Image (cartoon, rainbow, N blue to C red; front, top):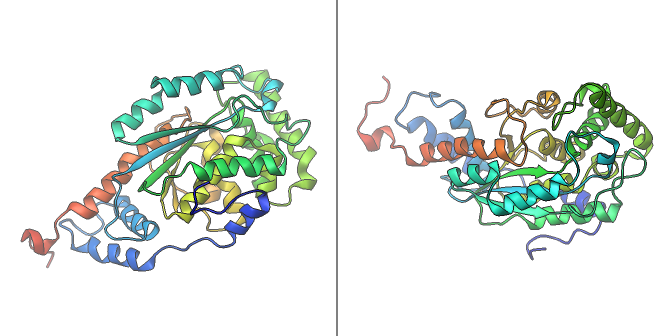
Length: 342
């Protein structure tokens, strides 16, 4: 663990960090707000890009904001619940895809290359599946805390903006279970095809989620316990990365449904814990829309994607970079000698 982050040995340590999160920098935000109307464009004409530039300044704690050094952090792990037949792909695909990331052959490699973003891939338990949470807790307190710590350790303080993603066969089942536990409703409201399960297999997935949440409900005292009981190591690591980014004043672009559920765990424990995050995209996984509405995170893009591995966040990084470039690089009316509106 880097020296500028505290040691995480238990979930109580995580709760302690959530109790003392740094706020936005209002001075930097106000500087961005003051500059925006002076730029050579009609007020509001860049729409959400203007909001993003203010958001960047407020969480980076500086003006002008920058988005030159960016990264996508992908966390990979295996799930014991995959043995219940909840995925269209076998569990060994997780390790195979990690090898593909390392060889440069995955979609996320190409997207990071296009965006000029670093790609960080962290194995947080590919060879050590979590417990099958349809029968037992997915993780112990120590195991879950260790995964959170691994996610925190993956965040480099020199990055301007990061995106967070994952790889793990079975993790949309964990995501649905977390979402169902946090936001209730029917289990089927939160279950989708994931890697492509249909018909009877989809029904089995719904039943596994419903039964698993019912099995552990009495122990779900907060979001971190939900994460421990029915989550996965890569979800815990994503939560850790998002938390570390807040502590290091790094804005975060969230990827899809799985990443959103990891983020929701933090928000459920501490409202406002995700104020330094934006949703990169809305995936084709049906419940992602519902989750984003619960988190009040309108997506930057909607392309019907459902790949995971940080792909939506990587594409959205281009929009964030555009916002920073326009805010910082455009001339003001005075500098350009352009007449302002009368």
